[in-house]
Length: 319
Image (cartoon, rainbow, N blue to C red; front, side, top):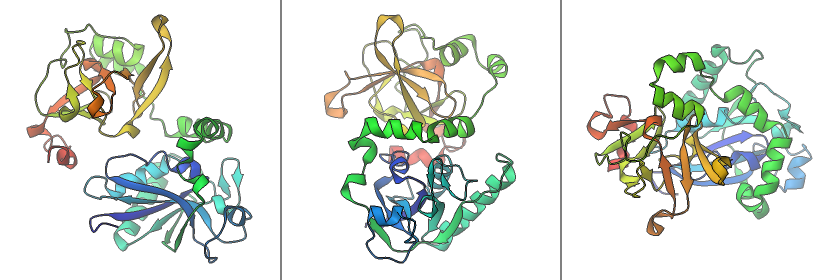
């Protein structure tokens, strides 16, 4: 492991569902599914599932803390689980499916414990937070069939995530709720129409389609960082276009069959706002994607103002 990389280890129930939220995020080098917490060396999947080994299914993440702070990884971990369930996760029961944060140093321990206390005091859940915080133990990589399962068996993975009850729980308990009436007062008419009514602003007549300044584009409602000027390009379509998001985890994609077309809609994960669509006609040498966004769904923050507006941690994007 490189000198500037650290490890984070989380158990959140079935490890199939714990890879996708962390994989391919900025600063994340690798996500491995495996077993940890028990005493048996090199256990098999069948042994761990028997709930007799002391091991739990877990993921181990190699990451660059300068780009992806450990605190952000912990925040993401909470948002994938039911932290009040001591007996497993959703329909997966038994000790091998318990939730645990395994810390690798005292700083990780402090961050994890403070985060747990904050969640407990927030009153978000009526029942106590059952997730354990324990020192890291030897981690054993799971069989190859379990690595990147969400990619290898995407159809079955989606069925499983939905059928297990995890998907609905996360949506009902971790998706922020925004009051429509309040948003109507806070947003301009075009911002509300685009974000809340799946509207589209006019091409070549919107704020950022030809903006060439250095900076970041954030969600107009939640303030989450969505795109950077370094990934913006002129697609000659009249809307701001990008080759990729800063952090794909902050976006969700849905099939859009409106207007007699089949397209892929892009929404903000945190605010559930409509942002635009993604197409496969972007620059080939930059990944081939075109994220065609509405200016009204975003706010631009120039590079020189990022620190004063609370986005200092994202200045690495311009190094």
